[in-house]
Image (cartoon, rainbow, N blue to C red; front, side, top):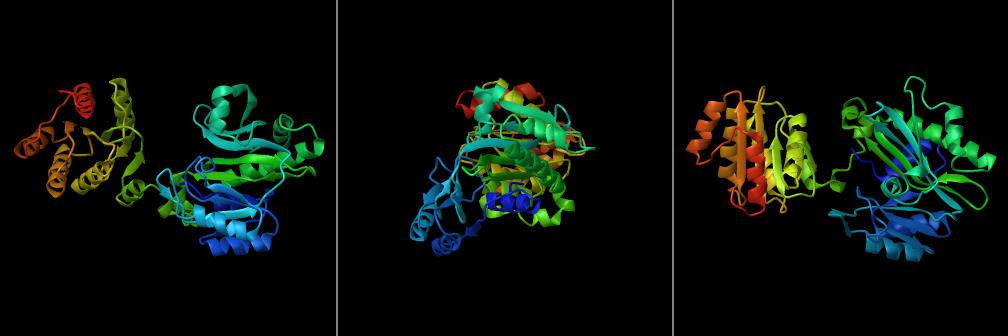
Length: 380
């Protein structure tokens, strides 16, 4: 679950990270009032779960309250990567002497949280990693002990030479890790972590992504979810009990089991296609899940073919077949569909599909190749 910047800033502030004042506005008049209260120049920032806000025109400097109102009026209602801006953060414009990056992620390779710091802050850390990876310093944190003071200080010395700034940055790193652990995050970052001309070290921007598995035991964090700022398809999938992630490809995938879903997407790419989504209907034998899954996939205009890849264990193939038949009666498909079914009640599933005018394959490679070919408008 993604948090808005203003929510992440509040969490960091509660853990003692120095974050400039600011408030969120839903109208241009609110933005003006906040700017008047803060005094001086302010930054007006779109609050959407999407990167590249600045490049899209969603981050603007305003020197007066009137200008803040005008800028907010332009940003509110604009669309950034398919998401409509419904609120803006208004915060003081800080004088910046230097920018750095500090972030904590969960690293599967080391099976630990990893603290990453870089003096190349203010830009996408992915860009730094790709072009100048030597500028990123990493430390795997032992979760039994947390981030120790000497570890944080050693990393802070890679950012600053001034001892006071080193100590301030080390303290911020420890507090960032505390916040990361407290909310069950999979990512917590400050970009940029800045120094001001008078030597202060401040967190100007914050991003936190919470592991969905943590939400049930952290209801106060789950309450921060803003469904209006998420992709509508992902919201519908979550409400339907489906695991769904929208991607940029053209082959819609409906699979049971996360491992099989990953393998299916790999195979789609191997045969020259691009997956349009990750969609796992799970182990439940419920035809309605299939109906909901197809409704979500067909709602994506980029999908040129649909691939069902079902390995029936707990998930019964006949239930999936019934779901496909029910769904296609409710909303006829406008793109070709390839079905691969094998496992529990496979023969019954094939019979159900055949009566409805569909055919089913049992070979996974053959099904994927056929789906990619049909998506490209080629003969199967």
